[in-house]
Image (cartoon, rainbow, N blue to C red):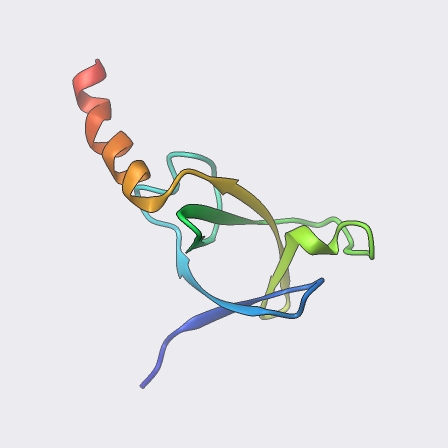
Length: 89
């Protein structure tokens, strides 16, 4: 049984495998899914903005829901930041 989740970029139609938000990625912002590419993490957060030809390059679809993309540090950097936080206080 394959439980992989895929998101489709609304501009390029490319599909990427995504993962549910976890404790490392959710510290950046509230989101539902994430994926990593070229050493950076892309966070996908629900949006209610209607996609059009001007903004669809940064939007992905999972099922019937549209998500806006936000890029941040790589996953290993996020894990390091998460683990460093308790020592900062």
